[in-house]
Length: 83
Image 1 (cartoon, rainbow, N blue to C red):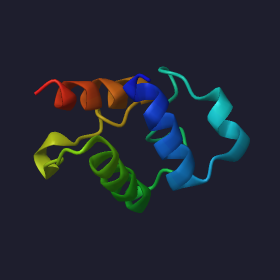
Image 2 (cartoon, rainbow, N blue to C red; image 1 turned 45 degrees about the vertical axis):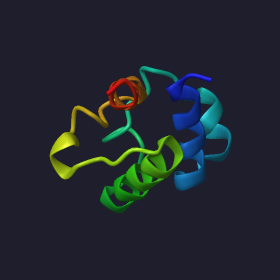
Image 3 (cartoon, rainbow, N blue to C red; image 1 turned 180 degrees about the vertical axis):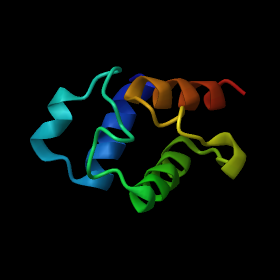
Image 4 (cartoon, rainbow, N blue to C red; image 1 turned 90 degrees about the horizontal axis):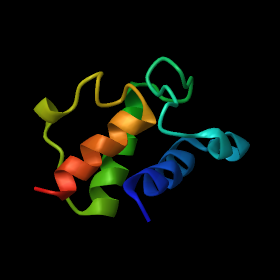
């Protein structure tokens, strides 16, 4: 399974998206596009990503571009996994 599929599950579990999960794709806008994704939710999503994928995310690695779309978040995860 690609990182994006795991991220859909993480977002669904963290944000309780319900049926909205089925509409997530690489172009889905996260910050500013999902009311459920506030600053506390971002922290919870990062924690879930760290736990699931087994790597640490430093504060300076995360910015608005990382959470711009589901695709940009997946690209970040995939780059961390390739390190």
